[in-house]
Image (cartoon, rainbow, N blue to C red; front, side, top):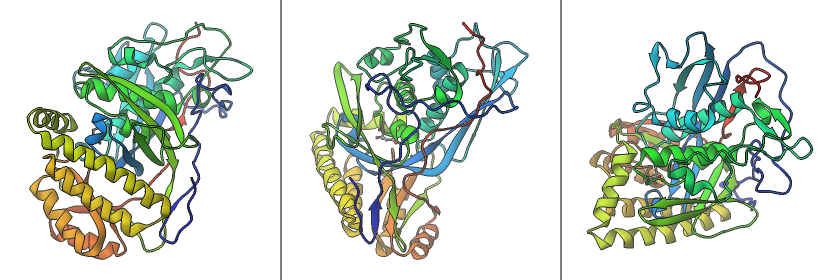
Length: 418
Ligand code: MEV
């Protein structure tokens, strides 16, 4: 899936760290641990994302395309004298930090570990539709797995322990910990050799779903864990870029998404993606719940979602063909459909209208109700100025940055051996 063109180039897929797991014959392609560092901290980071097409409809199984961005969240785990887990001086409050609590529940073994100090630093704005909670969950999953380590087959590197997307995941969404299979055979590895984009994306999705009343697609966590451009669909669109199926129980139904990792999208000279922030904080949970409520009484919402689904395929074709004009047109049409399902906001409308005269297309991105919009433009200066004059804060983002990354981990991780 590599396309050369003047404006948009979808480059070959960048391999995320250790992506495949025991779901493949080749094992998980483990690398050996990097040289040990003097510090005893475990540090991991993961990027936020923008949605090019398909937000909200993707929660109901329709396709969507998202890309990781330059802004990242960094999680640091520090062994502490004090028992328990603290953020600063305060014991971790699970209600206040549900994503951290979910990751600890699945990945940490307090009996074998030291007391922990956790700190989070992020330049992904919260409640802005840029995937801040997914970035937190994925960075956290990466840090805890590096700290915990895992048993792997010494010859192939395949996991003997961990959470894989192998059909057992619906139990995870029901709140059960399936740390399976856990034979404790083979060798125990830590740090880089233990972390996995597949697991971080799966557990990140679990954390998102648990904190969004069970209504969350795997889009944000997939983009954050793998990086680059990702496509979700109700069918396998392309064997080469397909990475896994994700299944989750949603209101009596088992919902499935086929997840694809497309690669990086290079915007060639003269083409930019401008992000405009309304400054309004709009929690995703509320926006997704609002759509679910309107959907139960308004048949038009499902029709709009079907139209969004068709549009995503058009957008994908345009991306593959490197046709920036067609990508822009599909973005604007997607915005109109998002307005129809009730997730726009007067300030988003103002920013989108301000951007359109100088751009190829513009739309809200993420959950809406405030947060951010994006515009694809050949005149970044004029588009940014127009959005800022209309009251937005702007920046230009690359599309498709590196996914989750382990920044530091002491050799041997943080847990005492079994
Ligand atoms: C949020 O970035 C995107 C939504 O589609 C929710 C989700 O996919 O879980 C609104």
